[in-house]
Image (cartoon, rainbow, N blue to C red):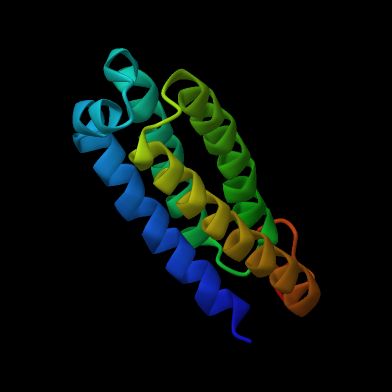
Length: 129
């Protein structure tokens, strides 16, 4: 499997999702019955953009994808709180299912990169003398 290609796709996905969260936080917050938390949505968008840029800068380094896994955990925790607040909101449950699916893809990609490249960190190779 081409884990570097998957990583690049996740980087582009992060940029797109982050842009949506940055440019439409009130709309997203409203769908999640959290109108008073648009700033949190915007902050999550900034995190996604940074994660996407990190992945695109170094798609073979698994640490950049593990960063997405950490973000997924934060997202799931926040969505869990939203679900407690509005347990019948289908948009929240849809978002939870979507984030779980994305988390699985992120973990598979990060583990694959760990095995394939052995590069946890985006270190540059020393120049040949």
